[in-house]
Each structure stands twice: as structure tokens, then as C-alpha cells.
Amino acid sequence: QLQLQESGPGLVKPSETLSLTCTVSGGSISSSSYYWGWIRQPPGKGLEWIGSIYYSGSTYYNPSLKSRVTISVDTSKNQFSLKLSSVTAADTAVYYCARLEAVTTPDYWGQGTLVTVSS
Amino acid sequence: DIQMTQSPSSLSASVGDRVTITCQASQDISNYLNWYQQKPGKAPKLLIYDASNLETGVPSRFSGSGSGTDFTFTISSLQPEDIATYYCQQYDNLRITFGPGTKVDIK
Image (cartoon, rainbow over all chains, first blue to last red):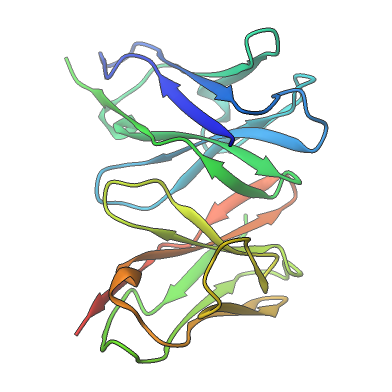
């Protein structure tokens, strides 16, 4: 059974860089059929796609976040990562990692991790 | 950018009722439309993909239809465990966008 698990600091200071890692188990991140992505949800609000990556390293990002986002993949560890720079309180959210079927459809999700931006 | 609208934003219905949620895209997205269920404190769960295909293991009381710009999600007989927020999600031109969500309660 495929499982995704987010990890990283739960508290980040304003202007610093948020860094999260998603570890994939029960399947290979190098599968040619899937992309891998990050999605976030501010408390009490809706879902926002951040960006996606293919195992080859090809990425595409939400234009509204593109200038601050970097997503990378480490196939040897079966992990992919998110970096979001220059964070503010508006970046406080539950961050989910997900597998994307055919690049269009997040079909498996991690449980999510709350990241709070505060001094 | 393609904008997604959902209606209603919330609804209350009785157990056994038929519940319908609509999602509208600002441009033609063909059938690149998925539906998710999210319960409090949990990750979203994929229910319907490509507008009308039921994800494996999802009860058949859930269904979806539509193409182009107008889509419908239906619960044929609302059950207590269906209390959740439902989101539509579209894909177009390398971008993914979610609708604002519809919160479903039991009356």
C-alpha cells in the first residue's frame, strides 16, 4: 500500500525558508506513470496547489508562488522536497504531499503537516 | 488562469436525501475535473476522477457528470458518514486549481 509522509519543522520564522520532505513508501518515486506534488491548506480555508515534480526532475509550479518555490526529488531516498522562501504569516498552513496520477489528479495524499510561520 | 466556482458553499440535508453540488470552470477544461471529500483533520480523498469515473473502493452512491465548463457531483442517498467538505479540482495547461468547497451537514 502506497504511503506518503511529510516531515519538517512545524514552526518557521518570518522571512526564513520553509523546508519539508515527503518520504514515499510502498512504491517507487521513479515510476514513469506519476508526478509528485505539494498542496497546502491554510487553517479553515481551501486547498492550494503549490507545484509538482517528475522523477526526472521536471517541475511546474503555481504561478502565484513560483518565485519562492523549489521542489526537488531524490530518487535514491524515494523522497521529494519543498522549499518555500521568504515566508510570512500567510504561509501558515497544513502542507500535504501527494502522488499525481497522469499529472492531473492527486490520488494518494500524505496525512499533512501543520507549519506555522511566527516569530 | 482558470477560476473554479462551486455551489452551494454549504448545505444541510437529511439522511437518505439526494445531494447535488455544482462546479463551474471559467474556461473549457474538457473532462479534467476531479471531486474530493475532506473530513475534519484529514487529507482529502479522491472520489471521482475525469468528471465521471468512480475511484476504486468508493461507494456507488457517489457520482459525477459534466464536461466543458459545467460539472455536477451527486450523492444519491446521503449517509451520516458523508458529512464532510467536498472540493472540485481542475487541471489545465500544467496548472491545478481547486474549487472553494461545499460543506455538507446532516439536517
